[in-house]
Length: 506
Image (cartoon, rainbow, N blue to C red):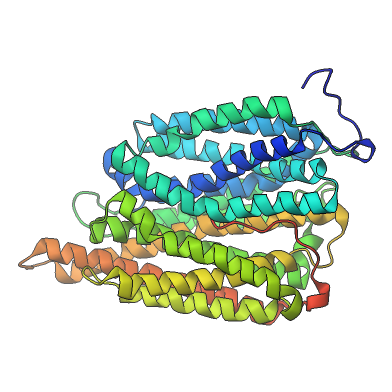
């Protein structure tokens, strides 16, 4: 920012003549964030093989990103508001480029995990800054609706693009380019942002809740690590037995997580400038929405992970074919969202969310029918259609109920917490279901491998058994979301505020 780019109070500004160019820049950044979450799923089997990542640890490629992203979103939003949204947006883009480059050249699993965590950190700066920049750049209601429509379409369609691009890059270049492709895009976007995006800041108090951010981030990391410890092999190379839930290291990490997360809640109750004002989350409808997104995020992130391995490791699909296999899900979300947004004002949220969660739960249960030789068209496609229709019926109503009764001064926190719930749910769900998957595979091998005439066939069946367990418990997570919606959501159609953006499927 230069002297020629002054920061004026937002109420004194004229419409930015370059606002549509600015929207293009912001849209590219948002596409990169959404795309990055799905593009890595397709590349993960190749990366795991190349770097020798264990089955227990492979989920860190996903969870390192989602934990850092979700755990720091609230703090990132505050930093953008107080330090300058344009400045933080540009810093986030440059940092994202550097982290992507580190991941693309990673020679060890640890370096890849660290790079993914750095990507999540800078995405947590970039994403809330992007959303805020749209709010302050477009002040006329019709233009703002158009801008948020573009933003929402990119959020919904970015996952589909990521799956296809990830397949192309992994199959015809290398999995490393799924990370490296971000570098030129992020740097060019950062340069363009310095030219066409106008700076803005929030007025008033600029104190940050650093202790709260540290407590919640370390607590979530410890919780995920506890899940991961349970899936680790007790005697690597000698047996397939895992440490399990009663091992001392598993219990230690889980215990530390509980202590840190309880300490976070207690701290938020007493600090004058909380990272998470508890009254925002404790409202019946808002809290219900956050729990729905937590459980849905947990189930969906795991669905993407295990279906990817089912397609590539079991059915022998190429990365590109795997990307296309997910397309019906993304298309269903986009088409369904258009219909749901039209009927929501007439029906209200609960009559839409409940059938949607029933549909999604059934779709996830049906995935437990897959075997090593079942057809995609008869066993996977129907499940993806049910899941996509169900999720479209959840995301938009839940995004609406997350803002019921919230004041203007808390609207940003309420919106950020919705995305945080989904990302944190994805982190915890991926770690938990990967642990259950590993335990199921181990149990199957223990029962069937000794004396087997065809060890390769037993191993293939063991993987399928693991998928079944993961999909079943993924369905149970969606059932928990259903129970939450039935018991907590009671907002009527007249209570629903105008929603400017919805959470995206990652």
